[in-house]
Image 1 (cartoon, rainbow, N blue to C red):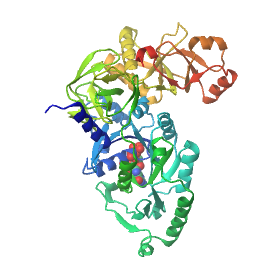
Image 2 (cartoon, rainbow, N blue to C red; image 1 turned 135 degrees about the vertical axis):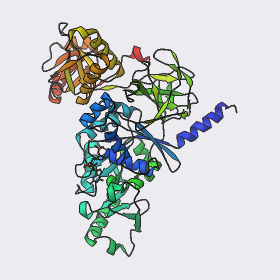
Image 3 (cartoon, rainbow, N blue to C red; image 1 turned 90 degrees about the horizontal axis):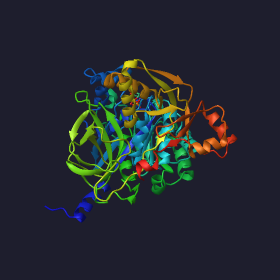
Length: 544
Ligand code: G4P
């Protein structure tokens, strides 16, 4: 059958209609792995929870790379998970959850259409969640809040929602509302169906789906099921919520101004299905992306996408690299021939992969909102655009201010060439940012990262892949700011205190500060000097 352009467009429109793509943002230990598993369990992608976690610990023995993961007991490699739920295709862009998170976490958000902010009910907002939220805000991503661990003593629902409103400036809408917490957790009231779902602790941390017992808000049995005192308190709070709280405004949700809030306990499978059902209805579909040709609708029939992440050595047997591409428009088909916007080269995308945890599966086609993994023999760097049809370029993915800095020293002078090659390639791949001193006598590169883990990965890979043993020497800075006006602007203001001037990979000035207070001091002393926490590749490189 010959597919005409309009038939193709219909197919794409239908696929877009049913796709929901999201990433989970959270602080370590909030329950991201647990929630991910339970979403997969309810999405039918796994029959029993426990597998993803088990794999984390099982898989390492065979490879050095994995050995690093095992030593640290964490998952460095992250994956894209796809599953179906009630006729929808869900893409979960899984970001690493460890405290030493890396720039990959930020970059993954560049490919996400929605974010699920997972919060531990006992702790409320935590550091890493706040940082990731800031990146979501820059992209105006719709945010869905899942407040987890209600089976433990928790802050009150009002305290939790207040914190989100006050600190993040996001309006909240409680989609469901808890009755009691901790040992007295009774269940949640779902506002759209006006039903109470009764909480039950599950056996074996909820490996299998749990049964769901529901009753009406005014059911006469309620007294025998829920403690009177808690029920009365809940009714009072519900009245306040429904009297004073905002209505659910999906447009505000999609603009990233309001967050629907869900309460539950991922470990007990409680609230997970309720979340999925509403998420399907409320989440943003894949939408238009800005490009050099203007807005590109997902239903634009030509295939376009961009690389948001590169991953080395996921498969210890192949030592290969994978470029993760977010599909923005059109339909991707295996063996497709596309253009690479930066190099102008033509490439056949012949071994595309869909990733499910560590198992790879070849993908025949993909639609907007999907992510495909392409084997990357050095062809791609972060932010690269691939396309068919008329040339277009998607904007570069920004570098966010690193928070850790260190001189990287080559321990063995005979390996200098390998050391340089390794550093250049790892920088190109986006594994770490590299800065240089303005003092010509200091030739060692300065590693700049958002998490310590990035340093360890660089050191490990330099030794393994390039035979270069290295040492690093920490520098006492925690903030970087790009000087918007370049060297001229810097010269104009003369001498600056409490800051070190360095160069980025494009020889542009960057200021390093010990702390935020010093940044503010310089900004108030030099109001003319424009500083940015975000570094973008120079325009001539991206032709955007
Ligand atoms: P992360 O990926 O965000 O780091 O968190 P993870 O899912 O690994 O969960 C962190 C800990 O919190 C785990 O306990 C997990 O079982 C627990 N947890 C997750 N959801 C809930 C919940 O709804 N209620 C309660 N009470 N605990 C929850 P752990 O002891 O560190 O590990 P494990 O031995 O239970 O696997």
